[in-house]
Length: 463
Ligand code: ARG
Image (cartoon, rainbow, N blue to C red; front, side):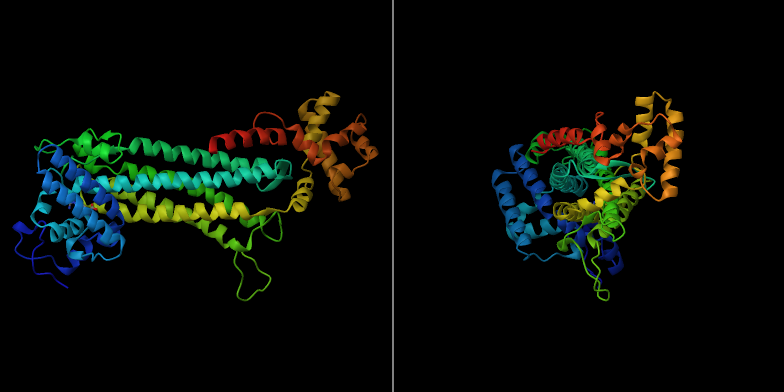
């Protein structure tokens, strides 16, 4: 539908309203209404500052601040009618304020522009998300630490190239992800610290001639300080890109773990049992229990990384300062944030519920000649053999066991001595998987004693 009247917010020089298609491509209200609370907080801080600096009267500011609270409660109650003709959340809120309080509403936009307004709202929104991701990451890490603590001694195969490499402990594997998510957490906190400067008062691009107090609005909104350059304040979205980059890396970590859970829960591996709460059935195959949550987490990285790339592309060619292209920032960030939060919560739930199948883990840990490295190390330590020769001798023992269809500890001492005459019975001490993992006591190694050191460290950090 074509609106024939010109826009009440900016239509002074316009004789006709926009074409319906123009309105459709221009409006952002369908998505930026998610920033209503941030928009109203920003406007309330601005109104208080306008009064404190004598730019508007105390009574006008009081009416604005009160009226804005009414608008917020209408939005929260779902009683607000959003208008596409009013383009975006900023103009929808201001128009409603005018309905409610009349003339003083027209003074709210003194010394600011939608350009610094949207930059402020969006920073506030992204900051809230960074805080939410911070909490969700910590919850997931606590779940992983609990798994690690329970299974510090449980043995499982460690893989390289997805081929059995050496036995490791369950706790060690869980703690590997705690380290990864711990770095994700620090990226989120770094991004928050860097982005916490307030654009409000940068106005359209050049600042304003009104005697505004930017320190005051920055402080009221929880920012550390105002942005120091008005052009930069209204025209960069690097804070959103940092959020998306940190979200992408975190989603990549989630995806790798999800992939492991898909493999581990298969009938071929049987390393874990996922709970019914985080699995689904098949409508045709009654025996099936599918790890759909893990699969969907694995897939989320695509859209989150896609959002990061999309916003990079939007921004990369824009001359300073604001261009309308930047309106495309929000949907990408909203979608990435929603999906990251969902993936973190689903992963936390799966980790809390999952049961390690220690019998299968233990059996798998000992198969595939997983202690061959321990045997080679024994030859070096006890027989003083150079490692290269020990590697060769062990290879011959592996070939012998393979030919016989057994594992290394199943070879008799005589069979061992056929390969190398000096091998003694004490070699069997290092061929068991529990001895193998217990021996790896180097800092950060897989030994249960080392895992417990890391569990204690993280428990203290995570509280
Ligand atoms: N809806 C706009 C956005 O999201 C608000 C800023 C509009 N500024 C302007 N100069 N038209 O970017």
